[in-house]
Amino acid sequence: HGKGDYKNVPETLPSVVFVDLKMPLINGHEVLKAIRKDKRTKTLPVVVFTSSDHEKDIGQIYKSGVNSYVVKPVQFEKYAETIRDLINYWRNVNIPPAGI
Image 1 (cartoon, rainbow, N blue to C red):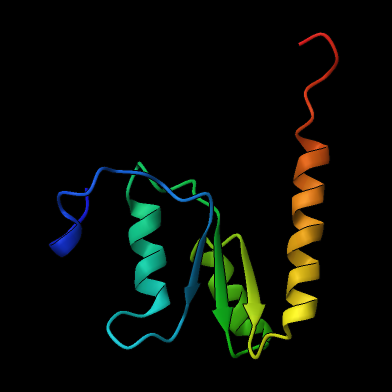
Image 2: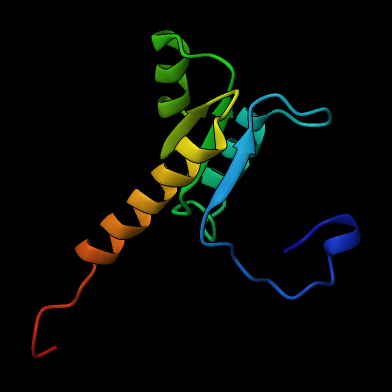
């Protein structure tokens, strides 16, 4: 259930969560940990924004349970193209077999 101003808002889950690792009140690792700990959200796809492209940092992000990461700064055209490719991939992979 929601907290603070959101405690009375009906529960709906997003399709995907985008989180920055460096935020002012709570860092992305803490958000990811909370998402993975909660049985309602532990399977939500999570994409992390990070300014680091070092293998060690990326490995730590994946160990934390992230599904994907995007290195900042983001070039919008390339990012939009990547999102379109992912949508097309999932659309094609999730086509039910004929007769179902």
